[in-house]
Length: 125
Image (tube, rainbow, N blue to C red):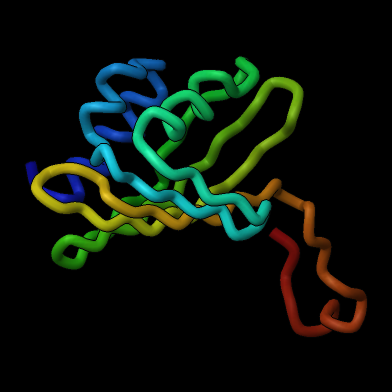
């Protein structure tokens, strides 16, 4: 499977809560880093468990997937019934049809308000 399809399938299986299917897309030695929270998840099983045990009420909306060889970037919106809307920019490395590394930047919409001094130069989204 080409790298961009692996990442699209990753998000589809995540949305379906297909944890076994998700694991099949991940290398045993997977390493995923979350710099915003200062965490590193080592190993396929740990990554699957972290996601399977996340409090329910969320959904996945893939905004884009862009690939350059074995490197794939995805931008995803994750609304949660009680925790608000999150966005994640994810940078994946694919080898032999499996995700081997990832770096994800998770943020909650509006969690980093713009300073007043920029008001004259920006438009609110």
